[in-house]
Length: 418
Image 1 (cartoon, rainbow, N blue to C red):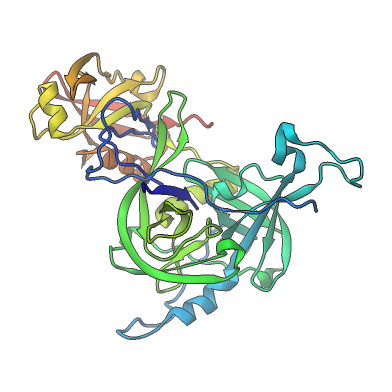
Image 2: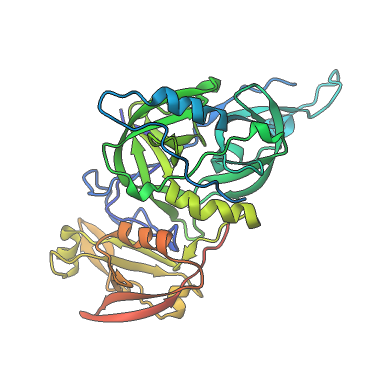
């Protein structure tokens, strides 16, 4: 049975890859899908726990290590003791009319028509002493009301401060006694290695304060997020893959290192059963550190945007397109009218070739570098844009154009918000 990727969120394996999150968007139908691509992607579906409807800042400095990690030492109880008070259960409520849409028929016997009812559950964690809590965007999206329950069972109503569908991050805020707020610190996810031990804390299936542990299984996965106007999907890079058990309801909870610091926000799983099968994903803290301050300050985050649709070159395609078999880079399929790339005169594909029995685009600029970084595949381009580029910054694209290498200066724009 083919497995799905469920959002708690994740990425599919295509020969054509779309550049999107940082201003590139993709077309998934031009070339045949490949199950053996060197860069696995993950297809996403929301899996925060759904509840059956029944009427009813500034980050703190890095923390000191919990304990020196020595062979055979068990630091997990210490991590749990420190981190669990910072992890909250999030319950979202909606109106009966919104839940049932056109099928909603108010009962004449109800004292209050169109009342608020539970819609779903997820997790979150305290970000600062001002009451800001980080979670996933898909946990709080479309909620009429958001309730937060702390580890000591105190419940408070939260306001949604900011959301970013493209990173699947959101910030909510509660006005509670400061004694309830135990902020977690961000670690540097760029320092992670495959094999590092990690811990997840959250509320799977509504079971508050559940801790699981595992390792970093892989780094640099891709996660499609929102859709672009052209029909492609924006993509989030550098996703952490872990085998620490993550289940519906874990969405928005922290993935921690052995110092008890946040290295990621648990977001999705790959599963054919809607339960955990050993493959979970988290948005890395390096992206959290960029996005969350802006969500707090202005309610949204501006993603760097080039305005191009691309795909990664492959040897079989190169042969069909008359390119050197070992040529690497990303071919520009389309350039968004009026976008940054169009203003810089980046040139899209203008012809087609026969490839695997069908027509495929060819003849456009091939991006092989950005600033001082080599671009051999889609991941290289989007990761650089996401991690190192700000809106309004000028970047230099190195492109192959009609067999010649040229440099194109582009002023990066802000991605249109959906």
